[in-house]
Length: 79
Image (cartoon, rainbow, N blue to C red):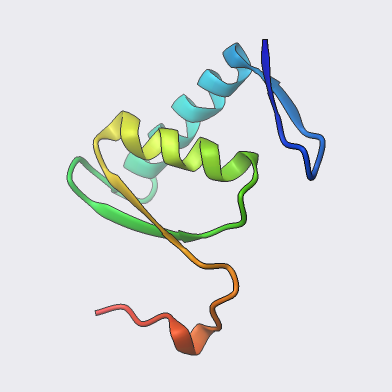
């Protein structure tokens, strides 16, 4: 079985997806210092990398806050 992105035609087996999720989760923790209970925001369309990001945040116990890719920089404010 596999996960297929219908817009880009990128395809990963579930084993490959798990490996990508684990690498991204490690990067979130080791490079970006994102930890359990942190909230991160991403701007992404509904593609395979969004799924990878969503799963990686769950692996480390963080929360993913998706932002609309149609927003302009002026629409996004961080407090």
